[in-house]
Each structure stands twice: as C-alpha cells, then as structure tokens.
Length: 111
Image 1 (cartoon, rainbow, N blue to C red):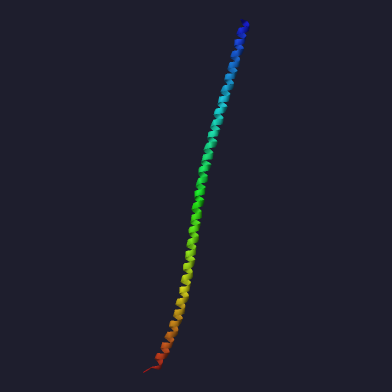
Image 2: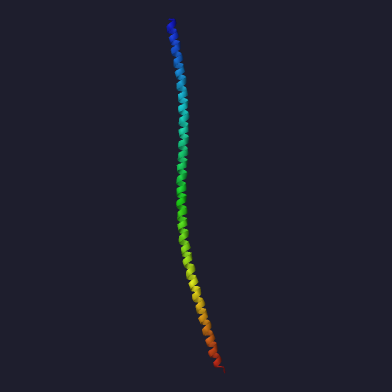
C-alpha cells in the first residue's frame, strides 16, 4: 500500500509539474499572439501610409504636369506679346514718319 501511495504522490507531482509547464506554455503562446497582433497592426499602418505616400506622389506628379503645361502657355503668351510690342513699335515708327512727312507737306502750303 505504501508503494501505491508513493506512486500516486509521484503521479500527482508529475501532473502538477505538467500543469505548470502547460500554464507556462499557454502564457508564452498568449505573449507571442499579442506580439503577432502588434506586428500585424504595424504592417497594416505601414501599408496604409505607403498607399497615402503613393497617392501624394501621384498628386505631386499631376501638379508638376499642370505647372509645366501652364508654364508653356505663359511662355507662348509672352512670346506673342513680345511680337505684338515689336509690331506696335514698328507701327509707331511708321506713324512718326508719316506725321513728319505730313508736317513737311503742310509746311509747303503756308498761306
């Protein structure tokens, strides 16, 4: 009977020790699961931020394209205005010459 009692005690000790080991394993699994959730959340945030960065780059690219297009329009308009100014200057010179010729012609007909 003594041997049976000792074996039961030994079996109980083994069961208790195994229970503690399972408890420690369970705690470790919970800790790893929490870390996996944290890493997963971080990856989701990185992915979300990456998408925002890509969207911002596309917006910047569009703004750059619009700016280049508008710069070309301004350049073309400036060139047209410059040509018009040269034309006006030429016309002014012609008008001055005509005015001088007219003044000279009128001076011949003094009464």
